[in-house]
Image (tube, rainbow, N blue to C red; front, side, top):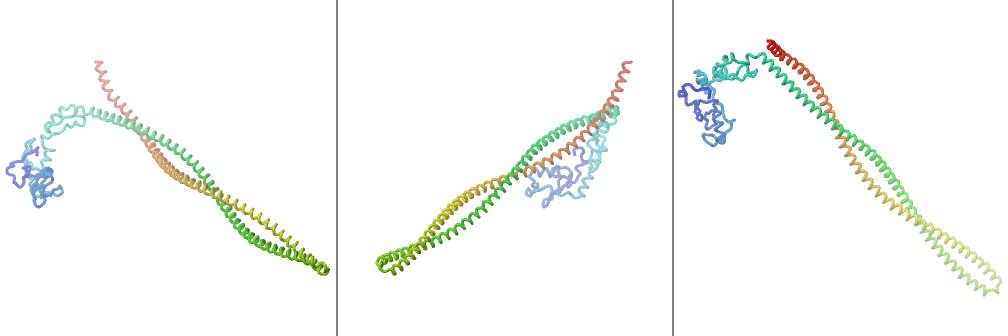
Amino acid sequence: MDNYEYMNISAISDALICEICRNPFINPVILPYPCERTYCLKCIQSNLEKHSNNCMQCNKKSLSNTELKNESPILRKMLDNLLVRCRSCAQINIQRSNFSKHIQQMCPKRIVSCSANDIQCSWKGHFDQLNQHFNVCPYEKLRTPLTKLINDVQRLDQLDQLQTNFQNLKIKFQQQQNQIEQIENENKILNEQINEMKKFEIEHKNLNEKNNEQINEINQLKNKKQTIQDQCDQYKTTINDLIIELKTLSISLQQANISIEKFEKENKLLQEDSNQLNFSQINYKTLDELYQQQQIQIDSFNKENQYLQEELLYYKQELEQLNQHFKQIQTENQQFHQRYVLYNRENNTLNEQNQQLNQQLIIYKKNLQQLNQDFKQMQIDNQQLKEQSVRYKIEIDELTIKNKRLEAKLYKPIIQSHSKSTIT
């Protein structure tokens, strides 16, 4: 709109005029029902922003850009056929739809740049002045040497860029080397940790062996305890049998003592009878024989009583030994129980240490795998950087050779002209 004006704008129908800008529509859109008014797209967008997206007609409904509909093609065709005048060249009767083509390609007053702008000419002016400028443009006259010089400068810039890239690659390569050294140091530390873990594994293995030995010893002690318990039960049975037998012997001994007392009484009576019947030799002989028999029985009872007393003493001694042995077994049983509790504690401690060592070993293995992967990736990146550095170095050498050749070509005419002027 700034570069053209409408021909006979008063004759344009009001149906083609925007109520906001008071000019013919540009990109006309229709508001939704119930307003259904037509406005320029930019005008209605600006108006909606000012009125918080409320309709400018009813001020109620909130609108969005998606609700705006394009105007009919017929109206757009009528707008495109409107005639305008170019403000730059004053050409008239240009259809508005063709004005963009006119201002870009046909208008003699359009702003253009010099054709030598590719070799640093900064002139800009009207198209009808381009030929006049072209005839006096110093850059165009020096196009050939300037083109070579610009190309040389571009090559130098490329060389500088390559050198910068090369320096960056060197820095990156050094950083990669530092990272590799760091990873190697970390790998060394991990190897040391792995060696420590191996030592821990050996120690753990020894602890397991010791634990197994203790378990075997505990099992042996259990078996020994069971054997002792069986012996105790057997001794208890034997003691009970001995007690029963001792009771039986005591009863027999009491009966023997009663018989001895009875025989002694009878003997005493017989003695009394013997004293009274001394006068009768036959009775005396009979009584004497009876007395001898009774004396033999008494001796037999005394021997049997002595034997029973000796046997009772033997059983008492054996019972005392059994009681002492039983007390010793109880003491050993208590010691075994204490050792068993101690072994259980040591076993629990060893199991906890084993779990901690296993967890540390898993963590170390994961860290080692990650470091190995990082180290391999660093080696790959390092190799790529070396190859890229070699390529850049070759390119820099080639560009340096080309640059020297170009400098020789550039300075050779200058030296020749200088030598000619000196000769003159």
